[in-house]
Image (cartoon, rainbow, N blue to C red; front, top):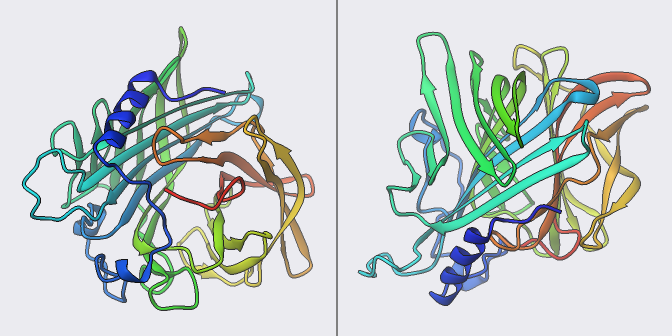
Length: 366
């Protein structure tokens, strides 16, 4: 399994020596007053494309498929920002008040290979940046930024690791998809169990890839999520399953469930849209049903063979490759499965997207 480059591990060791904490989505009562909570409000763009430094946790998550069939390649790049509890007025420039993590991966079907790299460090406004006015993220030579154009918008980015690199442009003329109630996405029954959350999908993506000595130019579809919160997991929850699918008819399907240690669903939500972005009700009452598991090199069992059951219909998730486990021990901590999947109904292909499975080896910590 590919691991983080040695320089990232050295950086992480330095952060640990400096008192860099392991972060947990579950807040103690004494911490709830330190961070603001996600509350109903109108999201304002382009400001809300940018970072929200007061909140505990935030991420920008871009996934996609390039090509189709046996030569398809899945990709993802994620920037995580995390605010620690170091005092704001601490004068030391070494105090880790704001941390930045970055994960990137490529799943190459033809070679059955999963490339992955991750990074961790302190925000410094120069080589590690999370702009507050718009999407403009940088971790040294990795980047993700939004470009406003006369006809639509585009996200430009780049990432690289041992044996791979990719630069891309993902464009859209479609409006923002606000999740939940006007961008406030509930993650449980309590008011503070929520996040601000929006998506940009589908995105038309063009990418330049370097895989070893091979150079490729490919096109496909992508999906961007931006989410920020101070508490996501309710008491008793250990992780979540999340799904984002670009449907072939131009629509989108987003669904998630939050689980306990016995894999019982504690809270779930589904948001299906037609090609015009209008919500559709056909997916109401969606249930996640495990059809089979896959054991990773970390010895964790992931339910990567998943059925989605709604009404009298069953839909099947098919991984592009099985081995898409992310080893994040040198950055956000632990393991999770995050991979390219296709959505099928019997033998009919309905769409492409990504599935994320967290909290299976141990309760989710980030």
